[in-house]
Length: 125
Image (tube, rainbow, N blue to C red; front, side, top):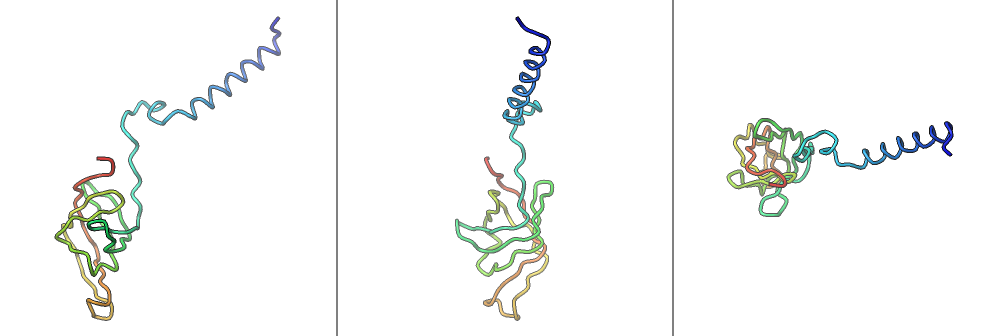
């Protein structure tokens, strides 16, 4: 026979089990959203063209349909007229505010500052 004390213990165990089960569910089940959660954009990382590294981006941030970089360094092999890849995004360069050369020599190192890119493709699409 179930006593009051055993009943309280059973209710407590069911509550704990229910909390564990809900914690294990994906966020979309508990929030009602059906799309994937947005991927966080790293603030820095490699910039690629045709699968090879052509620069190091810093200060990356998303804007409406665009990604803006504070700078892309070591960009001597980067071709702004061609598609870029950063953090899974496919990008087209729209504007470069300034180009600086290390020691005034383009062969020594190139730094692109305030780079505006248009998103052509997003991760998972």
